[in-house]
Image (cartoon, rainbow, N blue to C red; front, side):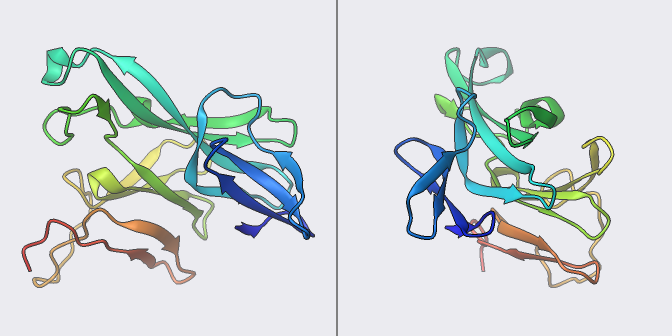
Length: 196
């Protein structure tokens, strides 16, 4: 549960698979994204100062992946980031599958449900860019503020940065990325699949 408008909180309802706004006595006052069929993703929702908000829908896309080494009847989980007004009109949108397509060289395609990105957090940086964390690619991506195109990728096989610390092995399946005001990034490194 996190603060929403004054006197309100928002929490993820795992039964409805939607974000629900409640008052101070925990009475429901609104359910977000009711006009969208896809489930909300449970990791985060962000209210902006102008009353609009960011939310990620988790679309289930049936796909034949047999041509790239996957299964013929696969369901691909696509994180679809939406900037919505209070009436759920789309102001901006970003699709994970379009911006970061499946790649058989780095994505595990051998399950009936393929979660190639596993989006898990978002935050604006000091310049208005949006930082997104993708656990299954061990990668943080910055979207440009003007059009949400990818500006850079940190971590994973498509890393665009050079880290000069010989003892640093990178991060693996991270969560909870935050832009610090001094240009640094803070995250929780799950550090899975490391040998030390």
